[in-house]
Length: 246
Image 1 (cartoon, one colour):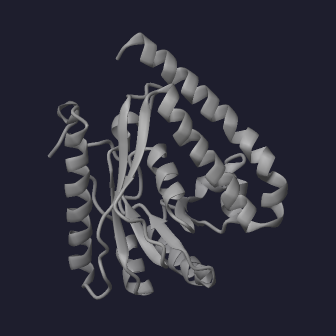
Image 2: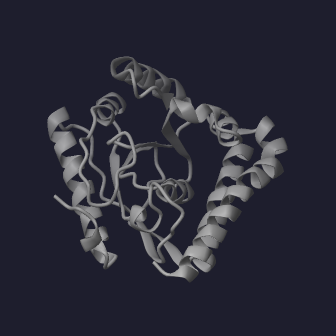
């Protein structure tokens, strides 16, 4: 870690934090009366962060594969706030399943509520899954790409965490193709700390898993595809040896 990159990282994090309320306020009049305005405000912030990452911290963001344009379920590896922004910016009509605490975050909470994102309480598994399924069904009048994190939380690159049952329940309930997504974003933008590593952060949309598999078979296939591709992206960074891998 060099001193110049530390300075760049601090400047980048500061301006990204400042621009959240700035962009939030700029789009607020439109967002208050229109879901389209809320989507536009969030997309403007995502694009701002991605753009400034390129020239402030020398971090380029790359989307591989073909993001779905049809109504579908997107099941993604989650390592960083950056992969959220990249996936959001890549999809035409994303709707995320999020932890309930984010409903009360300044600006973000108001925007995602307007966009009818789905909030779940991770501490109450059975009730959370039932509520999630009910809200997803209610929201199907507004077709788009429903984004879920099968492991339920962020995981550091190279670590293995169990895949939870919620994604499989939605797979059975919705009868839609599921697009697995791999990433290495956590290498460059870690869960904790201010340091941002230069390089190329990738989110990769993989071939869809079509409806019809049994629950256990689906979970095994989903985990295999995401973990295999994410491990390959980690090796591609050239610093994969710095991270624990099973």
